[in-house]
Amino acid sequence: DDDSNFHMDYIVAASNLRAENYDIPAADRHQSKRIAGRIIPAIATTTAAVAGLMCLELLKLIQGQKNIGSYRTAYLNLAVQYFVLSQPCRPQSFEVSSTTVQPQPVSVRVYPGSFVFDFSIRF
Picture (spheres, one colour):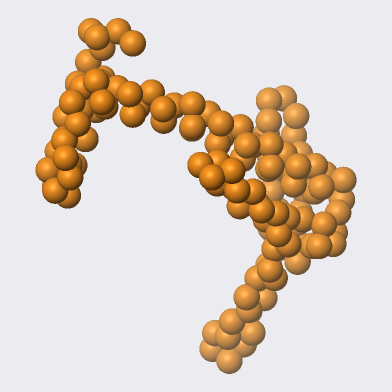
């Protein structure tokens, strides 16, 4: 909001260089400031939505859900208010040197604050 901030000068210069590269119209300082002002709330909203969805899946892991049908893959598009939850597909197996390779169990250790969650994922 303060006109003395030099970071807006950088954003305007960088966006105008990009506009020149791709033959699109350049934006003045006011237009760039308006566009950047809309990006920050969008990033915060998207980050909050993704963090919430990840916490739901993490809660299932902590509760010991072993059935892959309990988990969901989420697709989220906030621009058009589109939200889809679907069951994840099994990982694809492939052949290397005449041997079939299956996905290996993954061990994950999460450190949120002072809590430690240690769990393994088996397919």
